[in-house]
Image (tube, rainbow, N blue to C red; front, side, top):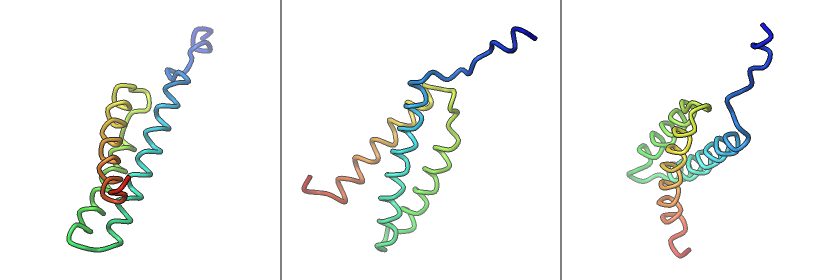
Length: 91
C-alpha cells in the first residue's frame, strides 16, 4: 500500500499545456467552421459535420498519450491555417 501512495500522475506540466493548446485550437477551428456554416452556401452542411467531427476527435484524444496530442494538434493547426486563409485572405 505504501507504494500506491507514491504513485504520481503520468502527466508532466508541459503535457497539460500541450493538451490545453490542442483544445484551444480545436475551439477556434470549430468557431470558424460554425461561422462558415451559418453564412450558408453549398458547403454549410459539410462545415457543420466537420465541426462536429473535430469536436468528437479532439475529445477522444487520450490526454496521457503525448504523441496523440501532438498529432491532433498538428492536424488542427493545419486546418486552422486553411480556414484563416479563407476568412482573412489578405493577411
